[in-house]
Length: 83
Image (cartoon, rainbow, N blue to C red; front, side, top):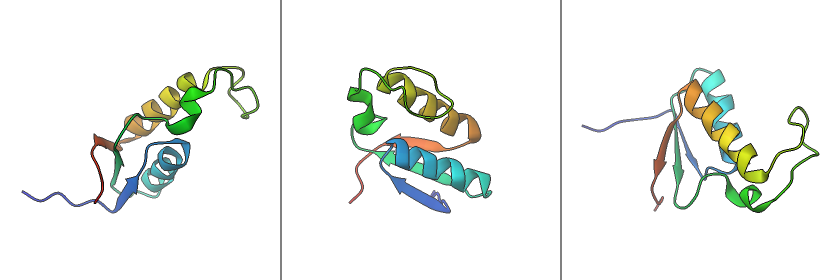
């Protein structure tokens, strides 16, 4: 069976996960493809303290919150490579 989505987002860094949230809020079906680790380069930051509404947390904690929020809203997340 072939599954279709309204939006296919390549990359699960902050930009990709934010795009997923906006797509979901627009009532679109969304799949996010990530070939490596979720969160992108922000996960390497030991301390994030200049992002509004987050307080101080690590980049990895920030990425986990973004991923959790996107999944809770209904995004399908897959570890896969886009070709």
